[in-house]
Image 1 (cartoon, rainbow, N blue to C red):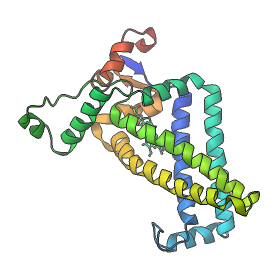
Image 2: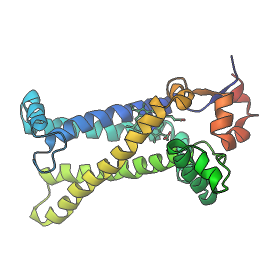
Image 3: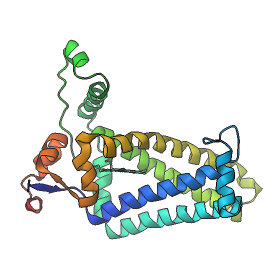
Image 4: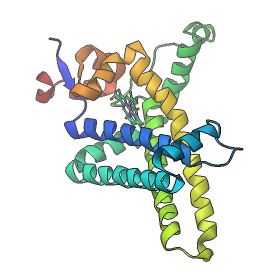
Length: 241
Ligand code: HEM
């Protein structure tokens, strides 16, 4: 078997798929809570069907809130069991090397849509600059999902409390919470469409997809897709297995 490189711990894999499952359930229930025909993304039949499925809007809201709290607790658990992994993830995601990463991003977008020709025509080398543990596309999505996730959780808790304890003086804060909750979901969801395409459908990323189950990627993939990371870890003994 080709030499394998460790990319994800078991707890990293768990939190990723746990997060994906929560997102799916929160979207299914959350969209069902929208009862404004002007902004209802799936038509008003969907919220009605969801509400009657669970015995009314109040039940649907309660289910959405429970899933939201389970989601937050999942991340608290992850931070408790793998604070080092979380720290590594945040450092890798938020450390950007502007010249290298922006060049990667711009070239990648041209290569994926038009191919190498336009770059060659203007005298630009189409080879992508080497990337670290994550490439700039992954970093951009991860930054949006971390920041978006914090906003969604925070505003969700404010909305939950507003039903129980807040008085009329909090109306302004609650309206902001509702608006920011929607915006953050929209931004992360837009990135998610690209993320799912790149991670699960695009054939060249297949080894990365498998690593989200096995935790490892083959040497060739590490060298070609994450050259700077490969150079750092290629002599580490834990990557010999
Ligand atoms: C069907 C759904 C999903 C699939 C197939 C999927 C697939 C993957 C794969 C294969 C990776 C590993 C990339 C690598 O290490 O090279 C990954 C990483 C990641 N996923 Fe997902 N994912 C899904 C849903 C989600 C959701 C819902 C979120 C957050 C809202 C998310 C956030 C992330 C983040 C932040 C990373 C690390 C950075 C990156 O690789 O972009 N994923 N995902």
